[in-house]
Amino acid sequence: MRKCENAKITKGLALLLDPEKANLDALPITDLCHPDFIFVGGSTGGDTTDFIRALKEKLTANSQKPTANIPIILFPGNASQFTPEADAILYLSLLSGRNPEYLVDQQIASARRIHDSHIECIPTAYILIDGGVETSTMKVTGTKPIKPSNLQTILDTCIAAELMGKTAIYLEAGSGAINPVSTDIIKAVREAVSVTLIVGGGIRTPEAMHAAYQAGADIVVIGNHFEEHPEELEKFCRHNDMTSLRNDDEKYMNLALSEAHKALSSNEIPIGCVIVSQNQIIGRGHNLTETLADVTAHAEIQAITAASQTLGGKYLPDATLYVTVEPCPMCAGAIGWAQISRIVYGAPDPKRGYQTYAPRAFHPKATVTAGVLENECRALIQEFFKAKR
Image 1 (cartoon, rainbow, N blue to C red):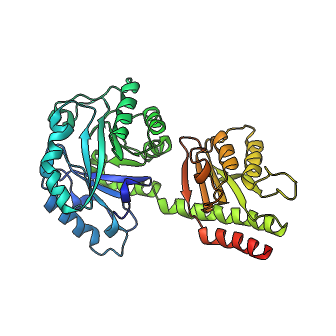
Image 2 (cartoon, rainbow, N blue to C red; image 1 turned 135 degrees about the vertical axis):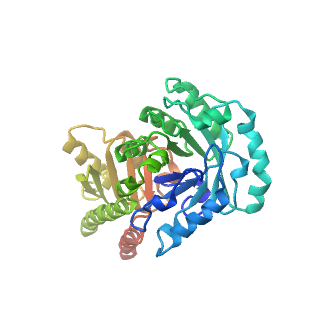
Image 3 (spheres, one colour; image 1 turned 45 degrees about the vertical axis):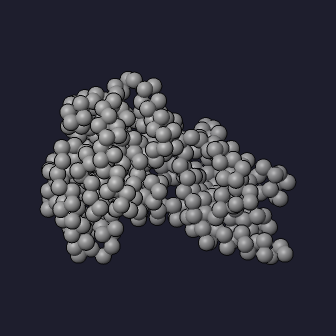
């Protein structure tokens, strides 16, 4: 799939559309205002085939590219809602309940058609968390949600889902939920499992959406709120603008490259690093191992030391570290101990990088973005070693 290949989904906003309720004409989807994914489905039914065809027509009308490329993912309430018109399907199993109809029977009923269609299938554990209201899913499936206070059961269910081979977990508070899934639950689940984490139900503000992302959600799903307030889609999309994030990544990586050039001018291996928190640079550094005759004087170590001095503390949980080359195991350990929540690097280092020797060194909640200005970062390293030959 275009944006969720092998179910490894980057953070994004999913618009949930129920074929029985959604008014496509009311949704202000444009090339400048659009979600990252569109989920289609509902607990009680609806003609998904004709609905998705109409949706595609809306997305491609007068569009240059962005909206035409939004992945459409089925979120089926039962086997009858399957259609090959979609790009992918969340192959849901209601693990929070014990009704065999929604644990396996509906899956068997749709298996042959899904298999023969060749659309991407994303095995997903669907876990209902009590959101303070009786939802349509509860009525249809005859199951009860897990109480938020029963965290151990939630975690055990999620761990079981990963062990069973699910590639995604959907924590659902339910349509119209009074209380969304709490950030404490999201954080705990994120630390317990490594699969894609989807969170929905009761999210009504961009701030709540970002709180879910910060806690560890990969996708935030909003449906009922946009049915009632379609005009607010633009506000959420603006706050969710991943292009802005990419632009920021390139901006700060360029500053890390400036640090790397300082190292190059001192005949050091040209690696540079900057650390950012709340859009402010709190630490900078470049390789100084030759200058200081210190094998630990890597760019990341220099920047972490500077950032800790700036903030007056040893932990940097709200920071993003930008470095021109994949961190080595030593630096990855330091980044993990500092609890840095996001790491962005340029060129990979398959011979000495952390992924080869210490793939779990970062903090469990940390996220990694690789390949930002990769060509520029690689060229600088290659220039240095070429001159040494």
